[in-house]
Picture 1: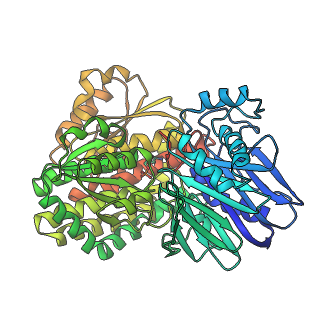
Picture 2: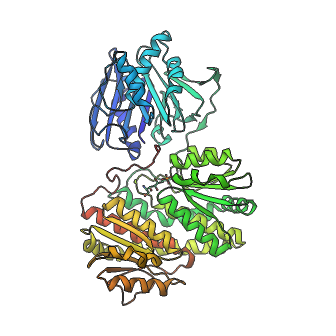
Picture 3: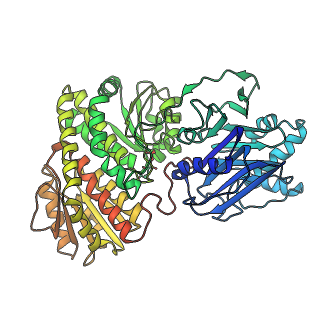
Length: 589
Ligand code: AGP
């Protein structure tokens, strides 16, 4: 997944403006970046590997240009492989998000016709294909893109830059693009966040659209008929909350600290949508909760919460596995996607499969007007504010809280759920305010050099253990794995050696006795036991206390793992906001 931004309009300091816009999109990929600006009759290009950080570019003022931040798929992280990519004439440039799955035969065809490639990427074939089509369409790049785009297999978003006609043209399939209009010109990006300061109204492109951006405005076409379509503009609505770092050292620290307010806001503002969501579950014959990564663990938590609170069985499926389960779906099914970004391609594809079976579609999503938000029949907006750290923290706890509230709404006692979530918010404020963070710091200093770390939990704490392990591994690079506490003796415990850190979730619920037995099994093999829960126990080498908040335990139990991962990452010299190899929104398969 990559970040893309383009502008056509009044002459401005466009190089730095594009770089600023790309910086807001770096969460989508930060292996390398590039900027292309129209200057003095040619396309000036600046491309570098690494993050944007304090980089600058020097171009004269310009009225047309675009840029790209890359998460490498085909072709290593090198300067030539960074976007933009130019055609052989140097008069045409493209930037691309997605994977051209049939790029090898296309590249072979183009090489055979004499085209010269400067990169190893799949994306560059688009520039050379357009070069050929433009010649066939009297220099009309939009028509050339209309003819070229259907040849590209996969989920792609393409922006092409035509210096001669001073226009940008674009098309997409599933991979998001949003076009903006403002007082100085028109702009386009993979996320509305990048249009702040450039647009006051936007239109989200659909898969059948082609779009032409000129200084004078936006023209939308149906890619199949080339008929013009009146754009359906919306006000630019980027998530509430401050997208800037403020006094925090990292976005991860800021977003962890925002969790109590996010939970309180969800309880007070989310009730109508959550009640409607619970009603849809009541009306459905079979509900599926679908998500990827952290969102999948929120979904699995939901399956446990609905079982124990509302005696209702919800099916959990990981987004990337959903297509192997879709055979059960029917028009009475309800498929609910959980996603912070609303752009995770595995989730989008799951929802497209659900739609094909006539199922009702729901979402618990943070980014408004995201692809997921716009494709479902009903949704709960998390309103967690922009989540800029690649690791999902506040959106995770907000998803779990929404599911807990929905389970209580289904049971007919929303107020009980609201009280639990508010209690969890209060508890997290206390954890964040006191000397609790320094206790976590001490644990991090003890374990940060470990190669392996295990996390166990039972019942409602099992999905929490999975999420805890993901948080720790993706930011510290320690090989952390989460297990169901009862699975230890079925092979897992072979992994435990003297000194292996083992996080044990021991809430005050029906699992406590058995999970403490598991802790003893780990301890007897030399494991270093980190107990997380309301009460200490002699089997723990160290205890991280959490407030006793009943079924809201997954909310407060998320914080120790988030904080432990964060502190261990800092001790290991990692960037907690942009860990290696990752990106915030996985829009490629
Ligand atoms: C979260 O810490 C991870 N970076 C990742 O697992 C993420 O949760 C997953 O890619 C799903 O993202 P989404 O919520 O935007 O769909």
